[in-house]
Image (tube, rainbow, N blue to C red; front, side, top):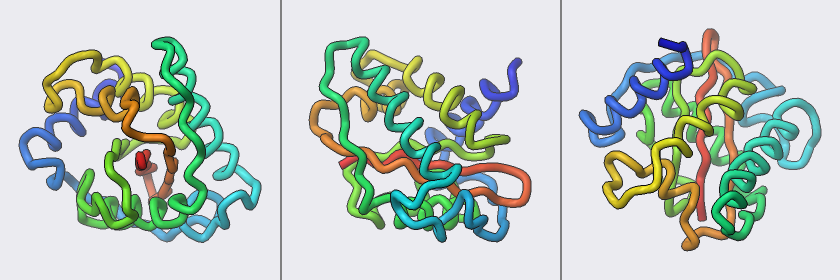
Length: 168
């Protein structure tokens, strides 16, 4: 089994078994290049990752003729803190709603930011379509026409990356 598939299976199992609130925790200092201390639109690796994340989601949406989501810049710093709190013991979706989002996808325990954007987002898109939110929820969030914005947030711990895509 590929490592990224393994991560998704763990996240899905935790979300289903624990109401999206269970899961392991990792801790680490916020890295200014990939955590909550990076100013929105401030350039660098994290800003490029935010754009790549949004572009990837919009690329998936385009395959179904859906309008693109706008970048929710004002939600990014809060999302970074949310990802840090999730990684520090809150678990996947453990702090859902704290940034005013209406929907959220979470990528816990990933090896790199690049793997989140490439592999985690792909695995979540591959869940859909379908009506059962417990099986297709990530896809449903990514393809929903109820949302017009997305904030891609990242937290790099000591050994892994946690990321959230908050929809509004």
